[in-house]
Each structure stands twice: as structure tokens, then as C-alpha cells.
Image (cartoon, rainbow, N blue to C red; front, side):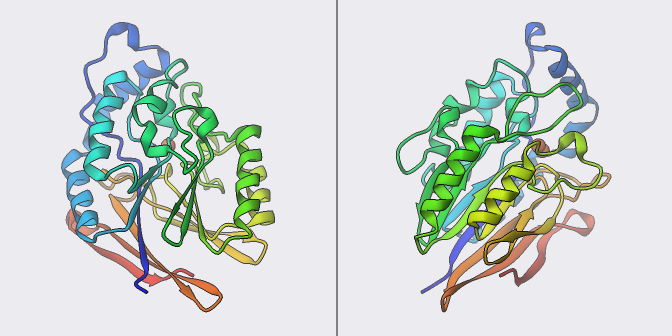
Length: 299
Ligand SMILES: [Fe+2]
Ligand SMILES: [Fe+2]
């Protein structure tokens, strides 16, 4: 059997920013709008993203995970543009999406991403398009993909996320059910389950509860975005350690602590009564040249 190939990219923060009407620039959006025009448009580049996605597609992944922050300040036109971009990445049955904090940037806009992107987070049971659709469960080949939403509106200068009681209860049920099946369980989440140093204002607020769920029921791999950096953190599981892997923004130039654009390719196959997972990382390095960054056994 050939291994199942799962690609992972995140945080495209699609530009250019569409023109905003004055009424749309509520306080947090106004800060984000200025920020985009001052700085972020130079960091997140469509040409970088285009090259990265083309490279990823050339590797013919069996499935693609996108872990949020497609837009910047959640203007209605940004969601429409992001939908077009998603369709270029792949069809909904090939792409699993979870939203990020920028996709729920301000209050009152939560209806936008569920409706416009609905079929990119449809569970196998057919649910999608509203908060109750998370967590969703999709079975693809030997994989069980579980998507959760940590996207909640926050105050200016905050980028925290939260699962909330209902999603955690739903996640517990799904993981309990999957424990009896022979599938490689991949949890898709925008915020990292363990807060990185200096990221308190951008943390997952109920991370401790999530870590408890993972320790009790187990998953095989956690994929996240949000920090715009390469990261691998090992979590406690019921039968050993579980890798949580973060990836830089798919459109980013190197800046500050953040790494330039990259994506992950996981080759997953059965290995006796365990799983084997090889991680390749491809992305931009010296001089913004796209190439292989890493190729090593993860599990
Ligand atoms: Fe982001
Ligand atoms: Fe984020």
C-alpha cells in the first residue's frame, strides 16, 4: 500500500485588502486595516502563496488541511476572495478547513465564514455552516480528520481562541468513538494547544481542557497554525506522546520571529500495529528560494 499523503498549510492572510466602507471599520477593524496597509501587505504576498500552493499541488497530496486565518479583518469581500482561493487549492472533498481568529475578527460577522466556506468544513454526517458543525469528522483513506473552531472575536490587540464547553464535549464523543476504529486521527485546530512563550495574548484560553481530552482519548497528530512558525511540541496521550505540528504562514516573507512561507507533507501508513508518519517540510529559505527544509520520521 502506498502511504497516504496529507498536506498542511495555514494562515495565508490573503491580500490585497479590498476597499472598506467607513461603516465597516469598527474599532478593531480600523486598527487591522491600518496595520495591513502599513506593514502586513509587505509580509503576506500573493506571489509567495501562489508558488507555495503550486509546489504543494505538484506533489499530488491525497488530502489537504488548511488551518485558518485565510483573511485579515473579516470584511465581506475578503471572504468571497478567500472562497476563490480555496477552490484553487482543491475541491471541498479534498480540503479540510478550520477557521482562525482573523476569520472571526470582529463581532457580528460570524455568519460570513460558515456560509461562504461551508462545504470546506462539512462533516461526513452532512453538518456544516454553523457553530454546531464543529467539531466535524471526516474519514479519508486511513485518516480520521477532526476539525474544531477556536475562532472567536476578541478585543483589539488580542488574538486568543476558545473551543468552549459544547465543542469540547463534542470532541470527547468523537474521540471516544474513534478509539474503537483503526484510523490515524488528525486534529485540525488554528491555535496551538500549548501556548508558545510570549504569546499569552494570542493563546488558546481552554488549552488545559483540550490537553486533558487528548491525554484521555488520544489522537495521532495535531496540526495547527496561528504562530506563523515551524513548531513541534509533544503532548501526553494515553499510549505515549503525540506530536502537535505548527507551520508558518503560507504567504509570508521572513520577518521578526516569524518564519518564511512553508507547508508540511505527511506520509502516513500502517506499520504493524502502529502507524508510521514521515514529515517533509517544503518552503522558502535563504534568499526566498523554495525547496526542501526537512524530511524525517515524525512517528
Ligand atoms: Fe495568522
Ligand atoms: Fe491566528
